[in-house]
Image (cartoon, rainbow, N blue to C red; front, side, top):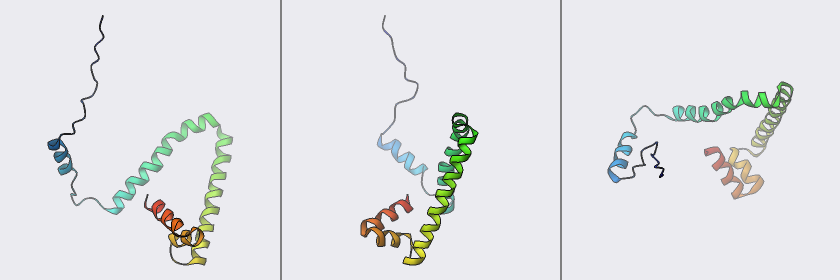
Length: 116
């Protein structure tokens, strides 16, 4: 007996005509902005974390979750305040702190992480 497999999805279409249609559909329509793009990125990072949080709390327990959340808050706050102090001492921007600490590669790394 032969088993035939029927695909659930249509195969991807990479023809030139189809890609041209997709490109035309994705053109700038005047409704996009930096704020809108930033909000989409915010939703992508934060909302996925929120979706996984209930399962993490269930697996870790309330006490451990609260302890680890407070520890993460503390470490983030300390890091943020140290970074602000470094920017004040060095002057300029965050990438200037990277350059002062690690040279040109440090500056480039900071610029990349700020962009991403």
